[in-house]
Length: 439
Image (cartoon, rainbow, N blue to C red; front, side):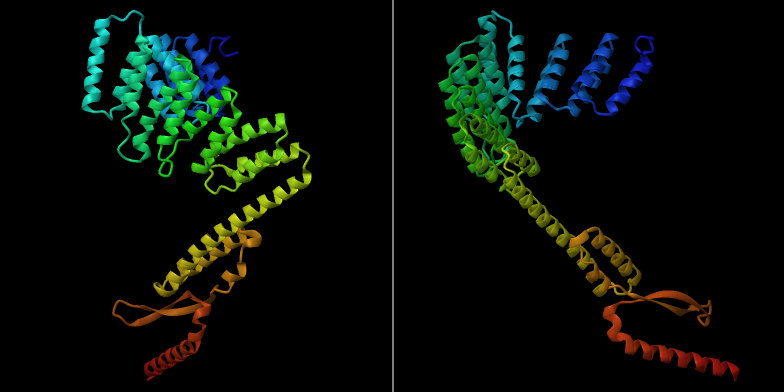
């Protein structure tokens, strides 16, 4: 309505309010189309930045890159693709992104490149990789040049030379860029060369090369398995994911394995096998989101009308959650105990602070519910005693007294007789002073 009335500024405010509610991709696309209608290119670019930050997915980055290409901003588009490739490296749906990136690079190379120009660039890249064989960006540039020419033998030769330069240390930061060489190589063999046997070999060699005990890339396992699925070779995909679980048990790998098993379960009735994969998955302690697998496992049993199994599974989940909470309570209690012991032994004069600590501790135990131990704190609680202390005057004599609140802790009860003696001595001294004044 705001647009119909020509109130563009008001329409922008409405869109901004809408974006604050974090809408889906359709909402962001509507905002972008609105700004494009009025030629606000820089505003569109800023909205795209917020869009991909809110929805960091392959299709959102591809939309952003295509927007830049339509305006002839080739370098901006390339940077968008490169950011997406780095951010979504381990995303199981990133293959669409890599394909779009490859098509983008191919579209930039005009047909009929003169041999002299190609030769000059080839000489340049040869010089760069000779000086620094671990400069993977130079290898990527070299590969893109050969792919633009289209000679399969030369393309494969450069790929093979590039992947022969294994990172010097078994650390992910060194391997991250190197693995992209293998990813591009596999995609080239499958999508461009259409050589499925070589594609399988590329995935196999890469997985053998990765030092899985030190680091791993779930992306490579998933891409290898998905390739076998596209070849309708579910047995091979099963084997790859089974090896992945043995070497690198990650949530994404379990999820894909379960998808395959559920498909086979539906087509072949292999319920027990699918169930065994779920059991293996929820037994892993290092999963990022174990609750997702528990939820899927419960839904699996519900769909099978296995209500007895579902109840047992719920009981196991509750026990697991309870154990986790008990451990959290134990650690929290240990912190309070250390703090209390510090005040008792190292800072006994800070009685009020120790009492405040016990008050916070008691509130925390109450919040723990049935696993809390309120009596543990109550046994340590002090008794408040109102006392008087002298207020010294300027000449050092005592002319007045002030009241203050003292705290007597249970562990100080043993000192009570001594305290009474001190109090009696204090009263005697005070009486003596009064008698002297009367004289």
